[in-house]
Length: 293
Image 1: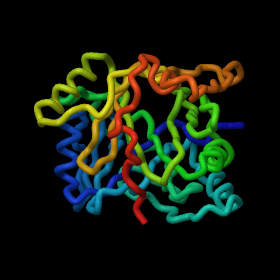
Image 2: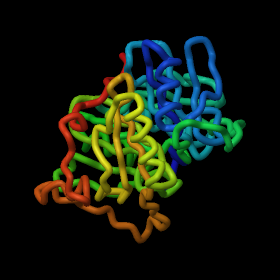
Image 3: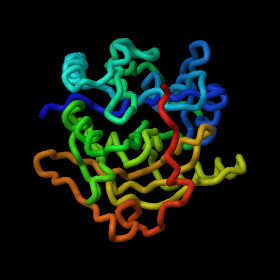
Image 4: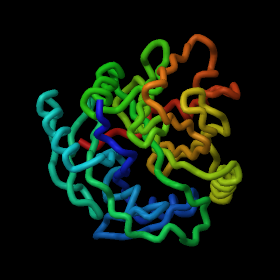
């Protein structure tokens, strides 16, 4: 199957205080504000116009953006979404910096926007008090039925399964760029559990933890190393209660024909989720933030 999704695009989150949320992400992780438009605040960690957008609202997930391989891929996804009976919410971009988009609900209620490339119109170099990531890396969304959600990722979005758990309750799907996962999922009430950034080194993860300590806050979980994806991780909670993962060394799958999806036995302790053995904390196991109605 030909890929329709090139890479992770962006996340849009509502906030009672969009500028405050944006400032917190800048000070903690190291993104920078690239644009504002009314109450909307756009942030990026590289040359893209934005990777995260905060808009005025109650602290909910507005949509998950996925960058399509072409405009023809957006047309194909529109056809598939109609055939699959998915609810189409809009066929125009929710924000600035890109020309075309299709926004719709996935099985279970997560909201996705598949869009044309976001403009690469920013300097790659900027001053930051945070660690300054390479890119937004992936999202993790929960759904009541991960089999249906997984079929959506594979059949509608054209993504490929990288790994899953033995009970099919957790799955990881990759896009054309080959990184182990752009979408991760777990079983539960529909929610955006976390969004993640790709950093350069362990020192970056230490710096983020120190930045949190300077705010009298702490990591929710980590450091550890995931089994699926093999990335070293830390997590903290943003001002809305959504988790933010920062990680390094995610596995890259460079040959689809030779990769066999791994199956992780959830009955063998916590190694599948943390090869270093430390189990998830109670704060990590909260569902995240719900999607906007």
